[in-house]
Amino acid sequence: MAEFAPPLLRVLSLWRPRAPWLLAGGVISLAALASGVALMGLSGGLVAGLLAGGGAGLLVVPFLLRLLGPARVVLRYLERLIGHEATFRALADLRVWFFRGLTRSAAGGLGFRRAGDLLARLVGDVEALDGLYLRLLLPLAGAVLLEGALLVLLWPLHPLVAIAVATLFGLAAFALPLQAARASSAAAGRLTVAQAGLRIAALDATTGLREVRAFGAEGRMLARVQAREAALLAAQREVAWQGARATAVAFLAGQFALLFLLVLAATREVGPAGGMVAGLFLAVAAFEAIAPLARAGITAGHAAAAARRVIAAAEAPPPVADPEHPAAPPTGSTLTFEDVRFRWRPDRPAVFDGLNLEIPHGARVALLGPSGAGKSSLAALALKVAAPQSGRVLLGGADLATLDAATVRSRIAWLSQSTHLFDDSIRANLLLARPDADEAALWAALEAARLADFVRALPDGLDTWLGEGGAGVSGGQGRRLALARVLLSSAPILMLDEPCTGLDAETERAFMATLNDVARGRTLVLIAHRLTGVERIDRIWRLSAGRAVAAAR
Image (cartoon, rainbow, N blue to C red; front, side, top):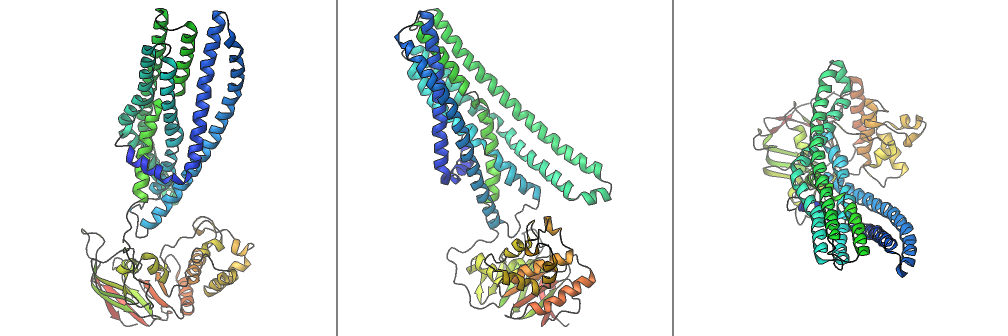
């Protein structure tokens, strides 16, 4: 189990806050199991007693059976109710932990450029872990209880019977699931990857459906999805075969145990006939109770593979680690780049080679340059989602390396060229920047972005639903809403990275004219390919050959 334990134990450690629910579900599950086994054992004793001519005990057994029958039904219901509630709560906690881990590691680019892969981990892999509690831990706890019960209850009948049945039970309950887990480990890993691959292909095809139809590529995209589907089907067949084989062997182990009991009964080398019948009923109940464990090994393999993917994503190190003892927040907001040398990877060309640049507080600066000149890289360095290989980036005179990322990002409000609008209300989209903002502050930000009249004219005003990706507004309105969100922040530095991407010339000029009035008292850093001619800029810098060169207007 060495290859499965670390990821599964890590997941279980995250479920510690839900321990009361998980323990309650376990106790009720064991009680339901005990009542079912007792019901079968007493039924066997009753049958044997009737065949032998009755006895005083037969007056008590029917009463116990009438108690155990309803009790088992109630306990099974409670087991389902509390067990599933515990699982849902634990999985909800796991998703929250996973999302928080992504926010720590995703700022500079997860390396997960594919939304389908992220979706597979957040949904599919987390859901695969629901079997960890219901289909693995609870049945294993029941198997431990039954192993001891078989030894204790069958020993008076005959020690050899108790040892033989308990051994076969241990083979079916523990050895077979472990062997199945090891045998199916590779297949379970392929299944997890194949499920993610199908999600990626399907999401890619549906989000790019307009382009697919425009270029007549429906057949090619469908073939791609079908290829991923075939890979998933092959992995599912392999896992199903492993599970079927484990189930068959476990079934045979139970039949051998019953056969052994019957052979001993025929040779009359065991205790009384009533005890033998009760033992048979007890063995049948025990092996029936652990029947799902034959596939639990497959569950363990699949859950372990899913856990590895979830943990790898959530516990990926941040692109730039915070210092162990961060310095106090600086009092100023001047942004300075001192002899910065930076490249994204060792095998990539240098983006900056001795970059020197100072942006004083309150300045309005434009950084121009063609694609690949390093404009967005400069923003990444300023936001501490990347770090230079040499040189320093200073904020208010303090080296960013000595500050925690939260302090840095609280000083810089960033409008990226691909700013996302969430499938939520206008109000919720604005509050992303400042959750405690009141209604007056929201309207002030919209006024500054020249969008207030448009929002007031909407039937639901601030509570108007935007739709996925802001589909309910035009491109220009969406950019203004994104600008209002940035302005709502109290950050002293506004960094706008290609803010007019996707806008037509007239809308772009109107948007840039708005910027002339909204950044008073703050530092404005405009990152763009070119200027429209309406911006009020104090200084222009051109990024070229890894350096910043002062340029005339």
